[in-house]
Length: 119
Length: 115
Image 1 (tube, chains in turn purple, blue):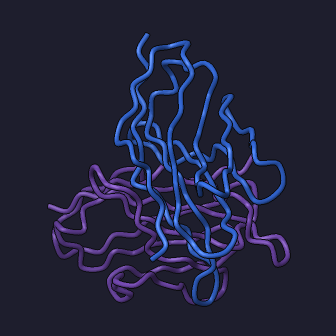
Image 2 (cartoon, chains in turn green, red):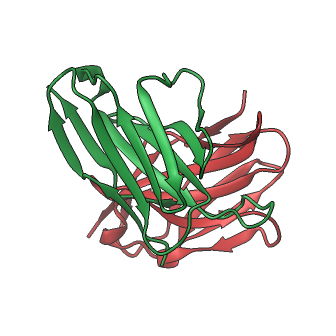
């Protein structure tokens, strides 16, 4: 159980285009979804946290207008990289979690990630 | 500043030997602690978590971790390593943040298990 599907797994596109990445919780309803960016040989950086039906909370230093996050339903969140440039090339990972009541100590379940390459 | 440290970039272990991947943290309050594993070109997988209770936590794939409050550590251990355990391991701490909680990841430790 607790499967998170991320699509696409790999995308290559031209500089200036916008790219949308989908994150779906397949067998559970995700109250909270997270988007991470992983740089080569570096650790994970949390980009934003989103709750279904509300605006995402972005981490300090993450451009809201560049990385658009939508969490329209309990099973789907999307990350759109707008006007992508080569420096946006990275591995993007989403995760989803069910928050039970006031408890937020449930583990996060991760997608397999999306490797984005901007030419 | 709140932080998580994985002091070893790489750990080499022979198959069958015990392994330890270290994690220490510096946060305020009582943190929630997690270990995740990442196989090549894949997303993360949850291994185990400590919230409260018994300091020794057992998780997936035979891994366990011990919460040591006085040393602010949460080292990951396995009694007998397998070649298939070779992967990148991340320690994470969940702490209160403005308006909610925040998860802080360590830099990761790459585990190599040799046959």
